[in-house]
Amino acid sequence: MMSQKKIFLILLAVSTVSLLLHQGGHLSWPMEVFRQICPSINSPQIGRPVKHTNVVFLKTHKTASSTVQNIFFRFAERNNLTVGLPVTQCDHQFCYPRLFSSHFVHPHTLPPNIVTNHLRFSRSELQRLMPNNTIYITILREPGAMFESLFSYYNQYCDSFKRVPNGSLEAFLDNPWAYYRPEEKDSMYARNTLTFDLGGDKDRPHADLERYAKRFAAEVEYTFSLVMIAEFFDESLVLLRHLLSWDLEDVLYIKQNMRMPSSKDNLSEAQLHKIRDWNAIDVALYKHFNATLWKQLKELGLSCVDKEVKLLRHAQEQMVRGCYGGNLPRLRSAAEITNRELRPWQPSSKVAIVGYDLPINASKESGMSQDMCLK
Ligand SMILES: *[C@@H]1O[C@H](CO)[C@@H](O)[C@H](O)[C@H]1NC(C)=O
Ligand SMILES: *[C@@H]1O[C@H](CO)[C@@H](O)[C@H](O)[C@H]1NC(C)=O
Ligand SMILES: *[C@@H]1O[C@H](CO)[C@@H](O)[C@H](O)[C@H]1NC(C)=O
Ligand SMILES: *[C@@H]1O[C@H](CO)[C@@H](O)[C@H](O)[C@H]1NC(C)=O
Ligand SMILES: *[C@@H]1O[C@H](CO)[C@@H](O)[C@H](O)[C@H]1NC(C)=O
Ligand SMILES: *[C@@H]1O[C@H](CO)[C@@H](O)[C@H](O)[C@H]1NC(C)=O
Image 1 (tube, helix red, strand yellow):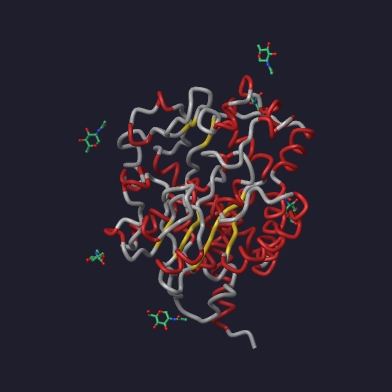
Image 2: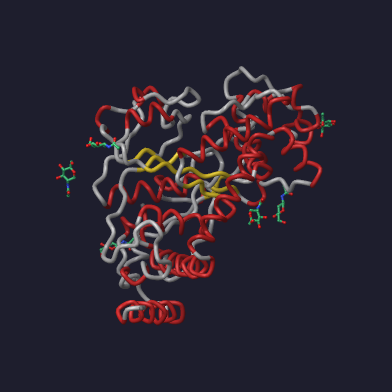
């Protein structure tokens, strides 16, 4: 028998959703209602589920992971959690590309609830460090687009790319072995970067590739409860929120660390084909986890996922408008950003990484704090 309470909650959810979608307004709404939209498979009990606070987010390179990291940083701060940060010698990545070691974590940040800086994944070392109920999450991006992004971002850093005449992606793809040295510094940005970040072997010989990729994907699936897919970012966030029993407002974001569209190369089918050949293990991983993602989305129910995605986008727009005096912000080059704290790092003169400026007091009217907007 469907209880009256259940029916009431469903009706309440439906009417609130339509109210929000049609009316807009401010950011405060009864978050309890959202939990009823997609009944969570993980926490079927009635009442407020406890939010998970112990998480490793493996931050992969050039995959929209800075945007996810920002979500974790803000959640940690709001909930007074400890974020494990690298010791000074490790820089902002945990001594990447070295395999992660628990010695890389600054003693002032022990024991951590959340680890979300770049690192090369080592399951045993993270398990040694983290509480035993830690949830592992990462994000993958379609290897064609990802490689174009890596090539442009690390053009002046990675020797395999620096050697290429005229910095031409075309030239690299025509004969990668002329430029690539598997053992040298920063070579991980030039081949199977996802596999490398996950702790795998980026240079597995071709003869063994299929078997290896299969085994490696199974290993990753065993450890990671959620592998997000950058091309389905909002859908991935819905899964994240359910997995961690977080509220919708915990996963609101604003995109970070993007390039100007003019800095992006538009790839031909032939180029994409060559990239995928060169990064075959990453391609196998991506295919595997894209399928896994859609399986998980179906389990949650595609129609309720769709509703949550719409709500997320709506809430996001309200948040952003609230911060910008009712407008949507314009993407700006670093030079145009007056607030130094908001200037994105520029990897080279050839790529423009864009960001936002935050006009002082623009959020006043909406009652949102400048501090929240800044973060
Ligand atoms: C935050 O956590 C620290 C360390 O666990 C504790 O000392 C402090 O009182 C907490 N602050 C709040 C506001 O909960
Ligand atoms: C997890 O850690 C807690 C506290 O340290 C311990 O009591 C519990 O037995 C551990 N659980 C498992 C499954 O290892
Ligand atoms: C590099 O660019 C120069 C000038 O545009 C051109 O003449 C040359 O052929 C290019 N080299 C390669 C290998 O593409
Ligand atoms: C790629 O296409 C986009 C959209 O059509 C365009 O804005 C951009 O300038 C193009 N990039 C290059 C390098 O041609
Ligand atoms: C990912 O999976 C979805 C659902 O099966 C499919 O529609 C989509 O084409 C896949 N994307 C890629 C890039 O493989
Ligand atoms: C922002 O608001 C504060 C407090 O009302 C005011 O003192 C300050 O002058 C304002 N700044 C600007 C740039 O408008």
